[in-house]
Length: 505
Image (tube, rainbow, N blue to C red; front, side):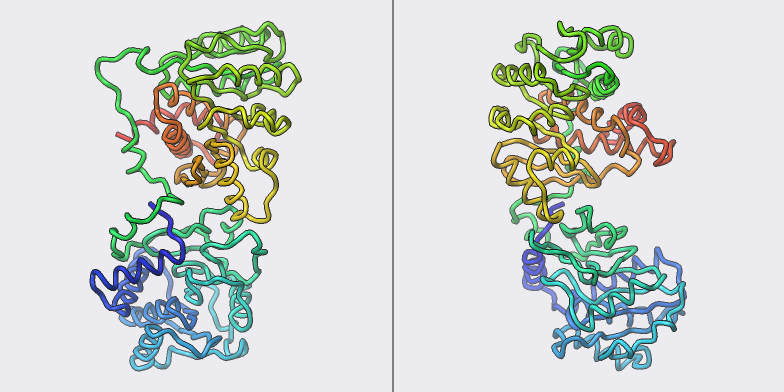
């Protein structure tokens, strides 16, 4: 699902109006009806308080208020009069509501015009003050109303986007306390980019995309810049196994991992790789880790470093289809030298760098220029900060991520909720699977193993990264059916990888 900019969203509305064709007021009616249908199907409440702005978002709110008429709900709509300019369609809905139920409608010129104490704690507040076209922080009366709503204990449903939140903003945006803290956001046709950024989760709550019939032809023509990864796309790139095949068809992977005290990372990455379907796996470990890896992962072959404790050398690379380095590795000088030497030997191999491999890169930045094109890096936010520098907000971080991937021609998997996989051309794929229980030690090592397995099976690096992130999250979701968010551990993700793959069939 493509994520559109506010400008593209306006153009999509107009394209639909021109080519369906449909009048703009009827398109607003359709959107309001979709919201109404969702609310009636999912919310149990006896009272609704609808806060409406003077633009088209307010028009949606006024239409929803009118649609509540046939139901036995108490309702009250407030038109927040922060501008004398009502949009054309908002004005039509205002006149319609005033004609059909004037008693439920109040125009608000001052904060004192609303008695917030009269709003029952179990009533639902519907926020329709500002839509996705907002491009500056909220001020004046609207700001005061938003701040007051946020003080209330009521559940809040935002229409299109929480009022005060921008669909997109630049690196200079300092944020604003005047943003509705919604419990639920009902948005139209495609999600907003700001929904996927960590700092906005407190405002967006649980969001749902409502299909209001905007024409797909326009969306298909738009450049693929920000994408929400859904199952249909994943199944389209997933390779089904042939009946007549053998382990040689599924690649030979090399994993360089582990040091004294951190062999667990090597084990988790190895098991993740094997459970993701690699044909053969060789794990290069320090001499001290030989017995551990052979007894813990009998399906893997072992390559033994001459060092007892750390990584100082690597095997001949020609026999491998893909290489991963980093889980539990360490950052000793000899390991840095071995890593640099390995980069000079890599030719046709796909490469994944994680954990201490990333830390080595951040402390020896000249090595970034030696990475093969389309190398996959898998940092969590702190590791990425060490690699690329700090940011002012999450939108700024996204810009830094794109610039970093374009500069070094790498693929970066920035881990977190809605893990974003950024390509060398700046395209960003936001993942839709996973849960907070996966924020646990070793989870990233498992992901590295999955990516390595898919690369060895000859998936292109962009598709290997995107598919691996989806499967990793799906396995975590399957694990959560038996575990709690607190009790879920990395081994649970490995155990559920089979179920994750089955979900694609």
